[in-house]
Image 1: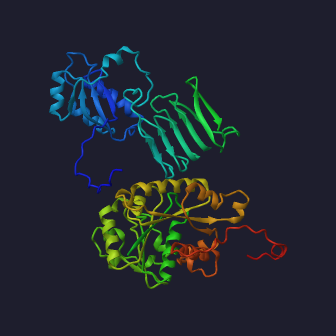
Image 2: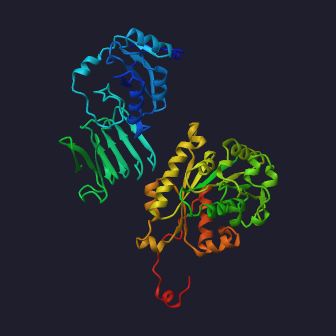
Image 3: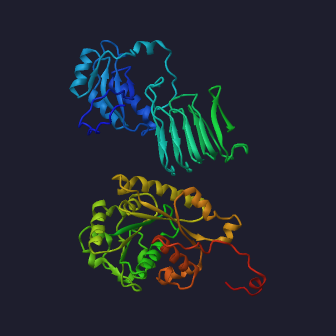
Length: 249
Length: 271
């Protein structure tokens, strides 16, 4: 049997590898005016959609002879909308130098080259306030909320599921890129699959929601939901990618 | 140790000022040195309810702006020796309340050895209301048995949990108490009003008390005597119970069950 060793104090510094979950900001144009208009329209409806996520500029789709975009301005614009760009990837030498001068890191040889994405049909032009729908990101930890969500409060689980152990009160909003589980009365709004995941579902032990939405398909409850599910445990899913189905659990 | 209690609600007209006056008076009657501050700058009312409107010379904003010192602005209550009122200014607006200024005044009250500071919040969720709850240690959320009041209380609870100093600095959260006011057991029994259990189920914070609807409150307001001084009325008793619970005592809930009037009562009336 190994002898028990004295516990050593943790060193002041440790190094470990990590994978950052972040947002890719794919640049299709370097033109100031075009970028400006598009940023404004993209974020107009949901100015506080992002909560300080890290972001990387993907430059692989820019034309080879494209002039360098105004990096400092771009970073400022995105920061004011809750995104924190810190690097550029797949940038030409000229673009990389300009980016470096404004303090951005230059990441090279990043695997998912834009050509593969470009080969696919253009992603759904849903007016979802996300620059590019991310296909299956590495497993994000589930967000767990154990205090009541009150009127006017909003939580967003980026890239994953959310579990709420306390009531979601009228006027509160739960949003997740994955599924939503509410083990208490759901009386506010629940929006699952916020980035278009149609397989996301909503589960609750007490359905009394104001609105439920999955991948942008929503249903309000002006009248109470069916007696079979009203104030009862229920699951909400999407059938045929366009039809909200509410079933008792 | 000074405890700062914010009396708030989100919605207007639910009884915040009545409650502030009665809770402050009740704590003072029990021997605690207490100050009650009117944060409703521009719509000051607390001085009327406390019956000291004719003695206002300097106000909260004067103290914040350094035009007067705290000693000059504090008004000693008529009924309790250790209760002081800091009135709001009627001629300014709520922007006159700065965070540094409010903090300075609260700190000074703490130095003067006050046990409790009651902050009477204005309605709404804007600057004035936020200033009133920023420094709170405990919050009494005043709610009427109707859906709009309950929803506004829910909203203000969310704001307490995000904008109070305790929340921002990650300290122990503000202790929240629910006080249901203007409660009519008869109407709740008949389903015209929410019951206090409905309210508690939604807001999910501990119940401090239920204050019955009563004409005594209006009378008290008009006379400038906090309702808690109206001896032997259900309102005064209910406030006394609530203060007792606040201080850790246990009291059964009173005035919440509806009893059908018996034959004699119906024949001869009576209260």
